[in-house]
Image 1 (cartoon, helix red, strand yellow):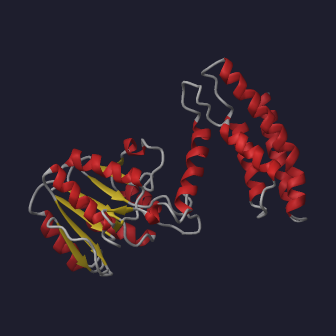
Image 2: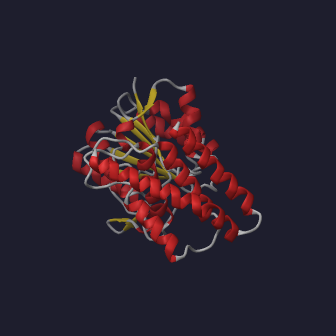
Length: 315
């Protein structure tokens, strides 16, 4: 009964916000403020109960109502006054209490991770200002660490990278090959940027990654033997990524990976304006193939630019 009642209140709050939107942001805030205050108070009571009885869970319907109401306010486009800022900061501080021995429930975990993900992704001073030995490398450092683990696990003889950009990631991969003692990198891009880093294990190809002659050249390199790892990070449109998957997935050896970069765009959870992209290509590809699976263990750092993008070949 309590769950049904809280759901009705949440629905009512959202409906009130929608009706008030036509009369301006101030009216929206006046309509949702009582619901926010009530839900926030209830949430804090539940958190207090959790402290007294570790292991209790927070009701997901209450969480969703809070998130929906906050979203309605933020979409108003005005800066929050100090009262709202204080409320939101306090609510986020209580989303996950450090004195608890268990992880927060999935809805709370997703809220924390997704908000930090958006902050990190849309801040121009984070991944866009990341460098490897002086070369710009447009990657999340958490994902770069996972690459190190994958190279140690797979020991690829050949790494195929589409989308070279500044060459930082190709150089990083080549140096990892030095560390593990084997492997070569071929990196493909339609643009030839000057001053890309050079390495004896690294070959650059200037062309479209899906051009038939390029695919044939890379296929010939893969035939030389040994594990093959493929990383797709060029044009992020759904159609192009899907074409790359079709072109290169069969080169991947059993136990190795094809990694589809930037599946986080198009609202997963970043850059919602992007349109169908890598994630949608992955979904299409996996619907047609049963020899690749999403390696969920590669989500262990919570935030990745490649959610559901690390695909392991099973056979």
